[in-house]
Length: 405
Ligand SMILES: Nc1ncnc2c1ncn2[C@@H]1O[C@H](COP(=O)(O)OP(=O)(O)O)[C@@H](O)[C@H]1O
Ligand SMILES: [Mg+2]
Image 1 (cartoon, rainbow, N blue to C red):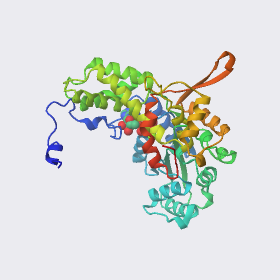
Image 2 (image 1 turned 180 degrees about the horizontal axis):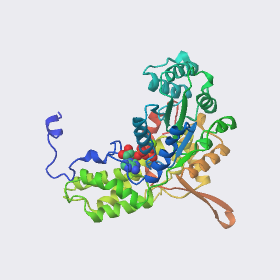
Image 3 (image 1 turned 60 degrees about the vertical axis):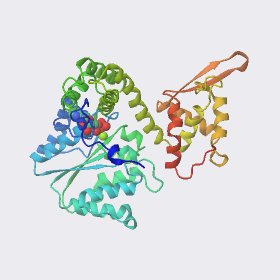
Image 4 (image 1 turned 45 degrees about the vertical axis):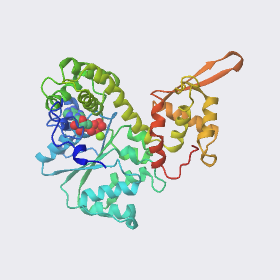
């Protein structure tokens, strides 16, 4: 029998390196935006247009994950709206929206507080959106975050959707200026394959958030580390080391925060009273594994199967996964792993390999092997064991996918 009183901690362990671990949670809103002065100025500059009677119909904001796009954009827009009665800001995250309808429903929900039913469809959502906007101030900034997530939809074209939103369909009874701010990791026009009609309805205003450098990471991180760790538990050389590596490898503040949290947890596990560089090194790997696993789990099924095939050949002697593998070996493994009715042809697999390489998950190259001719080699860019580690979970989360054991 399990004794839960033994299992659960009543108080924090005496020896923890953490004073307030929550400070390392990327979801915690920062007290202030640091190291993004130029970006804030650029955004404020566009908003200031209101005072001269102009807001761009669209603003695109893009850049890799963890570069402060969401937090900076929201903060500056909200601060502006707080100072101008004629301006409202609404924020909608489309991350979980798998269809255009669900995106329209989210926007509707944010503006009206009410849910549109499925039978009312995209049209019903738009009707409600225009009605709601009739009661809004003269200027509305509508921030649509992670808009690149809504690309796959069999029923509705993102172009049509954006076109309706931007043009207002002439449905507005009052003169209301809607400014749509589209945040994404990719360039929206390219990623959503927007047609020329929409592109001409969009303005050119764009803000790019590049990866954070050493200085910015340190500026954002310092106050959080100070709160998170007991005094002296995260020494300066460890901070310096971690920030340098994070800047070099990622430029991503979210990953950097996770890096230090993992490192602190490792220090606790080992009963150390301070984080060491060794803890950081191991934490780097853990952080990489976490983010790679997340990426793997979000792959389309066939991409995952091909990757699984590329990471399934074991060295007979050592028992370790062999890397690289040839395209012939990958083919054999694939036909063994994917059940006959799920297998795709060779050409589709070649395209998938190209995709996987673009995503940075594999490297491929051609070897000349004398009599055997030219052989394509494939290698994962991360520890190949990680693919098998998420295999079960992937299959569980993908209904209809069958693999051979
Ligand atoms: N310039 C910054 N100043 C302070 N905190 C920041 C900054 N950039 C990012 N953060 C912190 O990191 C988290 C992740 O940033 P976020 O804006 O969500 O990144 P992105 O949208 O580019 O993926 C934020 O919630 C915030 O806690
Ligand atoms: Mg974001």
